[in-house]
Length: 538
Image (cartoon, rainbow, N blue to C red; front, side, top):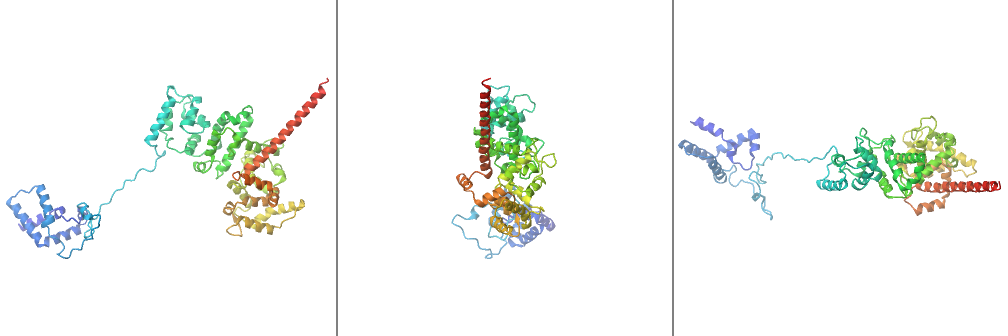
């Protein structure tokens, strides 16, 4: 009988112990703790009396339901269950706060700060919301419903869909893209070349394709990009520029000269890649597109009727200056320029040594397929670098030219190599020569390098006078202008400090070229009058 009683005691559930300061999970996970507590509990006199009482009731056949067990257990836990701590040895409770005791608000199994039997809390599984979406975060329902309402109004009555000439308002007013993107967007949606776009087709591309949730730059990038590429190339911009040329009021006069329309588009694209494609690999990424100002320029040109007020990329006057400069140097008009042609640039302002470095393709590899000659694209990169030495692409271009050994620093010997020709030219022009030692001190003062023994690209980009340093080394005309401090140029800079060096140069050159063209027209007109007067008597 004693053995049976012992087996019954050993089979008691741990929950019956009613130890409020220890969770059932902690008891079940540690067999040693269970055994120790069970042994201590059995050794208490009150526990022996309780067990004997329960055994006597069981032998008498008294019925005990689960509810009665639970009620009795709770009562025992508060009244009959003996304490594991002797009287007077219980740690004192923490003082009650004015906001109320935490013991009155805690759950039954929550841990007590005053008890040595701490509750081993079960690990809490934190639900992390989805933060990556393959096609971007979906738009809120409110935005989607508002957009669908606009689409329904635009497609109302067009059961067969919208044609290309009707789709332009959708591009500008609903998609918020520049209007000259309508053809490119239309072809993106009309994959079967049916000539129309239905409401469902548009919703499938713009909403289900998650275009609605993208920012404007990503939307433009997606419309321009080919589906099999992860970057933009120059040809991707040609469709939107063709539409710009055919629809912009400031470019209507070019419609009678398709060859100049093509040259204008090429120039705009070359300028975009010169400033935006900083890696120089001809692949414009979304990151590069977001870092630049092309999107703002596109929105500006879409609203501005005077194309020449859009100085970034799209100005026709800027294209005119670049093309005329190239045409002046290309004496045989084969659309290529060699060393002897380029040395004449800027009234022979450049040295032979810097021209040789350009044609060695150190600063930039030519896209020309003819050896020893640069094409129009190569010239665009050159003239932008030469006439705007305040821009980072220009500083990188000329830094590579001066860095003879390509180790990433400019040493005094490398700078002296280029300045020697400048010094010789000054002597030939009866200019007072300036020794290189003095020039080197001036360069160090202008750049302020971290190490006076050499100059890094970081030093060059950190100084506002870096462009003048390059002019000192290989551009004699600009070097002399800098030394004499032309008051006209200083006044121009103060009048509009927002203009870049390129903006000022292009403005001056356009005025000069237009005056020369007007003079030629006047002389040709006077010649025609003279010839008519001679022929009149006959």
